[in-house]
Image (spheres, rainbow, N blue to C red):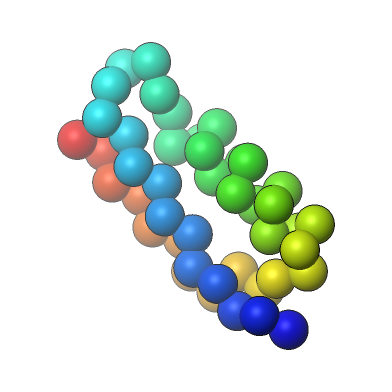
Length: 43
């Protein structure tokens, strides 16, 4: 099983890290990957 880290970067008020991470989590789940860390940058 592949182990992955997720990274979300938000630079405008129109974006949310939560939306990005939700999409990344869904993709990882479909691919059968294990999420080992999550990182977020808000600029």
